[in-house]
Length: 96
Image (cartoon, rainbow, N blue to C red):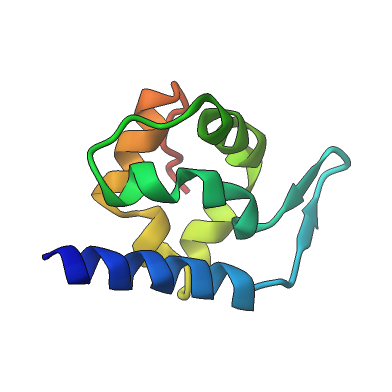
């Protein structure tokens, strides 16, 4: 089980790094899944999200639908851990 969590964490990081295609959305937000890296620990475990994580989730909120529509990111962004982190940070999970 621990190995599976490590593999999942590495997969998230790898996907985020491979998707360096930063997609600008609007004027104030740059959509980049790498911005959510402070949340990896909270997403892959039962630990609460840090204040930095919650700040990043709030900043990236306009980008979440784009992440959900991306086949490479969907499984991570739509995971129970990611939903729990969004809820803990007070960010409603988008319905796209």
